[in-house]
Length: 226
Image (cartoon, rainbow, N blue to C red; front, side, top):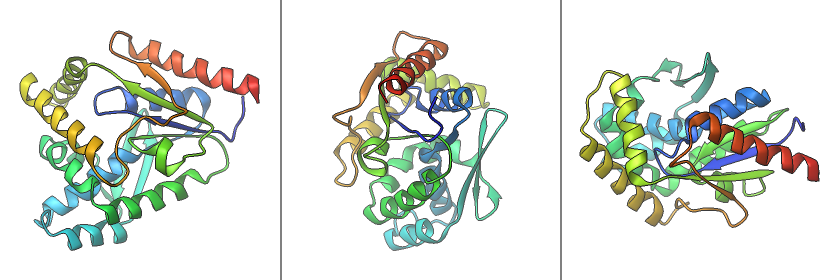
């Protein structure tokens, strides 16, 4: 198995990106990078500072905040200038606003630069998000695009909230995801879309273990052709 591969995993919210990417990285002993957590962190900071609607201030936060990710015991810990914001960035309010922040051109430019720097490490990298295979690492060794039905995605996200102690109705979660899909897919800067050379994996009817195996099979086949 090559130790210097970049594996890009893209897809809409609730498609299983984070969970799959974490497990794939663990099995391959690769570095795991959750780019969505970075956008969530900027969104959370802008909301906390009550400047979400002041674009220039949001851009300044993205450019000046030092975001670090640490993957420990199956959990991605997110730090903003040394402050642990792991739990705070997973709130329903951050979910509602992250797509707005993500479509700001200068915010994307600042975070893409940070992501590219993170990916330039010795050893393999599994990076997941919405524009990894198209913008961040268009020359990634392997590109995966995960998808699933909207009801399946909403069901998964609702369960995540419940597990975290927050009850959100299925309809509210579904509507939030549909809204995010529209914003993410139609934004001018780095829209959510499948890279032409990406392999599509539909996760609607498979377990996490099964989708991880599907991705690992793609990795193995790629290595055999190298």
